[in-house]
Length: 324
Image 1 (cartoon, helix red, strand yellow):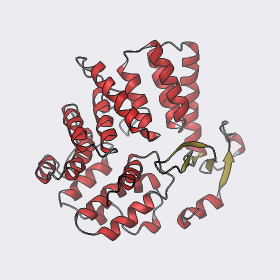
Image 2 (cartoon, rainbow, N blue to C red):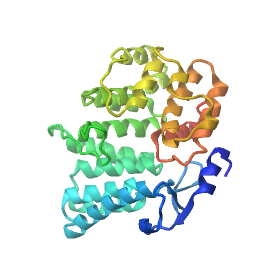
Image 3 (cartoon, rainbow, N blue to C red):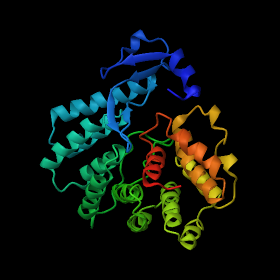
């Protein structure tokens, strides 16, 4: 592996497992890393993408919830809620092909379920099948039309244990992203316009505005981009989307890139935060003429193991599309 700043972590505490559950009682240090070497899917460039390394503590927590969802599904595999949650819990452990198989079987039982199409569409994005994601999410939007807004429970609760998003928000948010990742910016803009209707709190507004802002920039519409930033303020009530909020304050010129993340990427420890922040920072650096710094960050993003993150997928997609 080329990434020297990761070697000390892997060499110090390497634990290799297959797809079976780890024996946590045999592991004293719950922060030891689990390395599962199987291929989950492939990048846009044909690179094998393997399970994301995570601690025994994190894996066991997710797996215990997966076993509950699996038991519920086995008890009643026709129940819509059981289908959705079994697929979601599989997804949190990067078991995307298995999750999508559950969703596909579920659609034979519930062919008019926007919930299943929404979640399968999300996972199509994860495995880089963007056209199928658009198809699923478009159908989800059609099926959800006319329904009351439905709050979507969190699989990983925030610090207040308060679900913030809705089924409708997640459909349009992921549809916009699926278009963005294909360079179809006008379609993405229309999806984000719809998503704004359901961005009913500051967290959702921040997330939608960030992707919508870059969509407008890619369309060459700086007027729209600047108008999108008008509602963004320093005193927004942010519960979980602090990364997007900081990035938006940077786009608005209220803080500098160095206040969002260290630009010296050699010391990065949390890959997920780095990838999430790095994509926005790199694009901003390009926008302000700091192209070499941006290139270093984008290259480092693609060297991490955080390939399911939207920032990683977007950086990979930009490279495939030839966006400089």
